[in-house]
Length: 172
Image 1: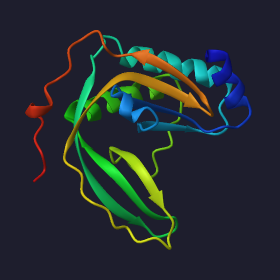
Image 2: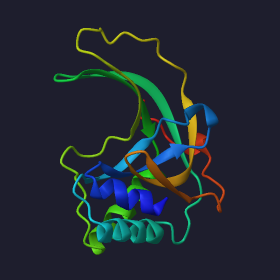
Image 3: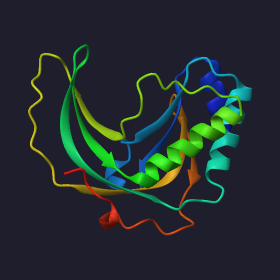
Image 4: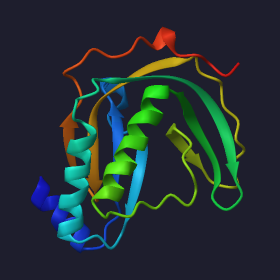
């Protein structure tokens, strides 16, 4: 899989790191932690992998997040229906990843800031952002994933028991 990451990066595919929920019902959904851009060399892919492994040492265990549905408007693309995530552990994990990437000389595209979420659906501008609010969902992220094009390399987080989602405070 690492060879496919190199190949896709060389072809100018978008390269990013994210977390995928352990729940099989969410196999294609994820929360993006960092974007590394489209012009990534094999050496940079290796450095990102090194940074990810450093972030996992010591392994934090599955990351728990409490989420709730919302719709938000993007003036250019239309509406996005997403699960917003609340997880102090997730924010700490991302910060550690960014620090290790910086130490490896890998630039992270962070121009839009970080708003932890899982995008469920994108709606065209012509379609109103109407949806039925879902119940809160507890998610467990069990792998840190490096993704470039269709290639995905998962680094296991499961060696430590996850934090209890009930201990996560909600903003309302």
